[in-house]
Image 1 (cartoon, rainbow, N blue to C red):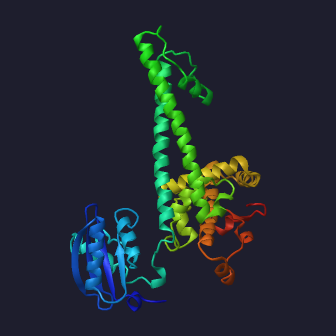
Image 2: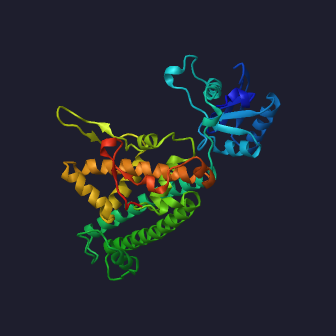
Length: 381
């Protein structure tokens, strides 16, 4: 293991905000606080900050930046262009803030937060641009899907209030949406029906347009995921959207230390819920809910389409497990499988073979985190 002080002479902590960033330099050997400065969050401001860092430091420098994927994203790109290594700072907890709070204090705390970390354990994004692109597409997808749902619900409500000749006792079908979008104005209608028909056409066309945009969004997600983790797209039940959620949550080597930590991040780790003679685990309702939702989508898809999963669920049900408990077991396994695929895809093949990484055959294990619940399925992909 290599200590930070052996590799870097100075550490620059950065407290990031929307308008300004505050920088604090400490000596990695003595821990003495050096210069402190504040610069605006513009391209010129970033260049001024980098010039200032090069002036007040000597030798290799490490930047500990808060919020590297949000407020500090543009700064990280500037640091990378200048050849300055950066890592994610660990903000101090409120119980640890004995010296009060200010931008300068937070910047210094960010720099000191990485002093105790070994060099090998520093988090460094492997492909930040691809992950950032996936995050943007996922955020766009959530916005598009929300707008489409809202427009569809508004259209159904309108057609149920005013009779325009469409049966809306159930949800609208694709042919019905196309028919409504093709309507033309009728001069014979009264003012109420004219306005309602025009609004129905607008909403139907909006739903159809958003549906096309969602398909294009899904295709772009699949193309990006294929560049970083193509094996995910060949996994049973995993589609482009779920795979993109997995990649963005896992992020890069070092962020999630183990598959158990990944399951905990996803809220798929088993929580004891035993009482008396009843020994069981329940769902974990904490963690990243988008990641948990992606695991749930994959589990439900396998329960519907994968015969091996259906056989496993039937066996567990015969043992007295409820459907919710079975999904919890499946989600825990899927979290394990996804983490191993992502970890394997981040390492060179030669390194994987030389270090004795588990082969695909060794990944064919189903069950929960408990060893007593493990079961081998030879036909799992």
